[in-house]
Amino acid sequence: SDSSGYRLWVEPPALKSHTQAGSLIVNEASSASIHIPADPMEQPVPLQFLISAHATRTNLPPEGVQVLGGHLHMHKQGIRGRVELIRDGIHIMDVYKTMAYDFDKQVPSWKRWKFLPGDALIITCVYKPLPEKDISGGQTTADEMCGFFFFVAPRGWD
Image 1 (tube, rainbow, N blue to C red):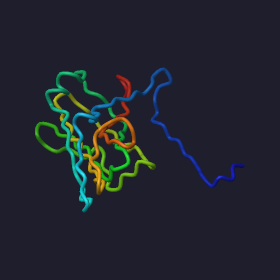
Image 2 (cartoon, rainbow, N blue to C red):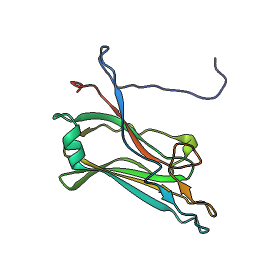
Image 3 (tube, helix red, strand yellow):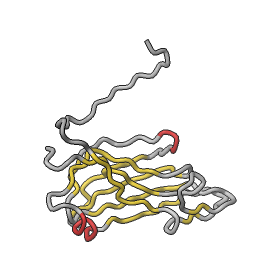
């Protein structure tokens, strides 16, 4: 009997009742690594960040991590983004891609994939520069950032 006009369907993965999914931030590029110069033409500026195969080989469990989905996060000047899974030097898939990012309408991608030791991720965030002011990285929405969050299943989940 709600008259808002919104309908919400929630369809969580079928997890055992004694387990819980988790989340992981794999990259948060902020203050030191982001600088977008002012541009009166406002030409898009892509920035790329790498999670190396060495880093995942060192930090992921031997069986890897089952990813349920992910979410790319930027602030107000973010316009597009992509996260590529690279395995043994070969592009396997885009685990996240948006051609029209909107800070006010952020939506995760529910795509299952396995993140294995030795995999690499290329994270690309594309920004629209301001015409008269440089943009720096930081935590406020007046600043910018480029972060990818994944939602992971607990160990032993198939």
